[in-house]
Image 1: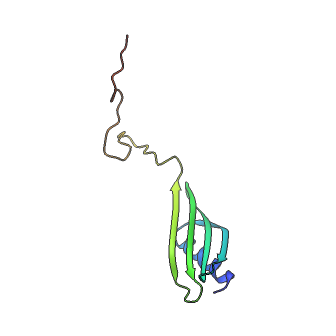
Image 2 (image 1 turned 30 degrees about the horizontal axis):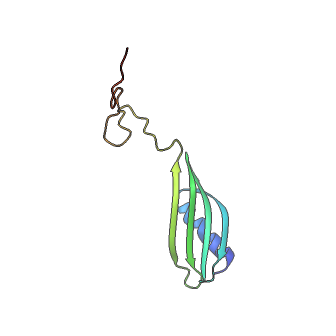
Length: 99
């Protein structure tokens, strides 16, 4: 596998996951592994996709996918449970005096 094929396979993997992709870098290691690093974007999310390919067999060896939505994982629905199943209403925890 050469550089162009490694990059092409990386873009195919990225797009098959529904992302818009930009190449960060691609290089061949001393262990005959192509490391392809892509920036990945989706509606309201961004992150990276790092892929390792065997240079001879062309097998995908490893995937490191970290694409997260914007907003810090907040849950903005009506129930105020922050997606953890626990309510977080006002005046819970330490008592505050209204002197």
